[in-house]
Image 1: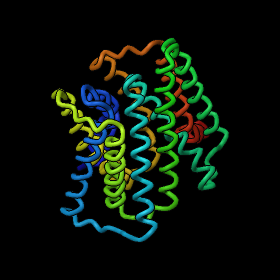
Image 2 (image 1 turned 60 degrees about the vertical axis):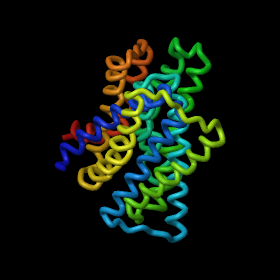
Image 3 (image 1 turned 90 degrees about the vertical axis):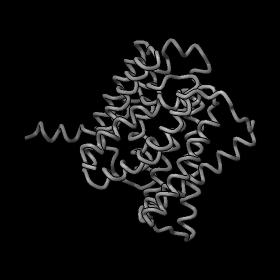
Length: 293
């Protein structure tokens, strides 16, 4: 696949995943739909490792990374799917747009990267002011709404932390074995959680529900991760950083026209601040260099 096509595919996948998450849980329950997604994804990844003859690593650090990666997926996904029962798909994508900012903070604290320049700190402040505006939208009269936003924000924070830990301890491990190991472990955690909570198998899942689960398994998980790692290795980071600038707005529009989600003016205002802050965080230095020329 060509790089431009792979890049476009990742943008489309990241834009449509939040809406598919909401549709997949209709009549299925968020735990069962998530368990189904990760179980199918685990089987597909195992099949790919056999077909591609991918090498597995079994030393202690690799096993620890499989366990950590699996728990990272399990914990963050449970929070996202739980929050998706209350808040819109576009808002989920919008909050996840904060991930580069949160990852940058953890990278500075854990990896000691000198990345938090005044320009980047300003971008973080602008983006989080947008999040606060969303918190105080008219819908926040509902405690469930505020808890759902907080749930997705915790998921973003945890996922960002896991990303930085992986960068420090797992950068030399095979990507396919890391992905497959993490997905398998997360499916095991999810199966245990499902058995502990209700162990209910829904019988009236709609065609849209099953279609969304399959889409998330094949496209959202296996293909999405594979294409992301492909473009990550072949294009500069500045271009990859543009993806979170596009996907939240696309997800908001898709949610509005395909799912009847109607964000109020404060959410659109928060979206403007979050994307503006993220733009300043990612591109401020580049723009400053252009202005000096």
